[in-house]
Image 1 (cartoon, one colour):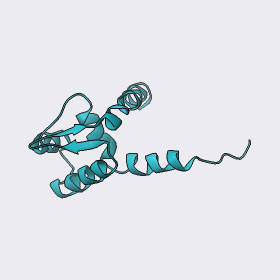
Image 2 (tube, one colour):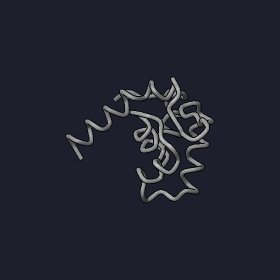
Image 3 (cartoon, one colour):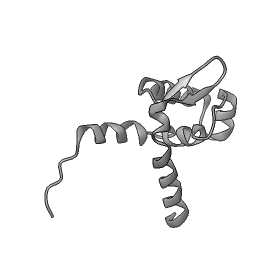
Length: 95
């Protein structure tokens, strides 16, 4: 097997995407914008404090944006939609 050198960009994406709750938050937002309370219901076991922190991190990454009363994926976040759907398909078939 040859030595694999990971791309720093790839590593960075997995660093924030793989953080607990982030992938699920993105999945919840992948079809339409949601209010904080709706996200909280979608992620029943995630505390509001952690959800707030994760949403801030995802905003800092430029994949989620906050408007007056709701959160939605940015264009950059929407580009992840196929990836999120592929993970769902994998989960359906193998988990």
